[in-house]
Length: 178
Image (cartoon, rainbow, N blue to C red; front, side):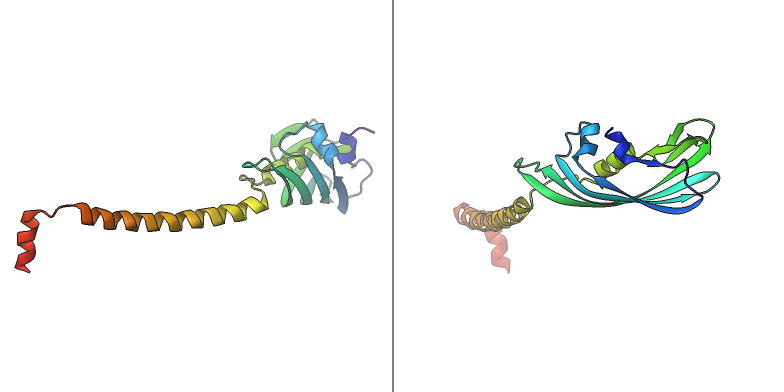
């Protein structure tokens, strides 16, 4: 079976109206695009199609778990993805991608392939900063401890500096005026 076919929906015999499809998200999708961004994915994409004589409007709801590598430690961890996107297909005499979410498709088109759309939605839903959940807690503890130590050192340094400096006689004269 063609890997891309798993992410296609037959629209040839689809009647006008609302329809719902559920596509399983697996590592097969990542293999199609030879992705290095993600290791493994499991979950589903629910597609709500509204077909009319001139167009097909699709609402995509993504609910998945994905394995990522931490940017800091390269440890693998699992993250959840929840995303939503609207895609519009307008019937025309040829195929053309007008925008990221707007396509022209031929009137006689029998299948809509959602592999690229789903992959792109997953890719933009990934966190920009990928940290293993344990690292996030360690980072908070590290920085709070570091800040406390730095504050104590600064106070100690200020006290030492004040004691070491000889007083300026000009200031001493002004202090007597008080």
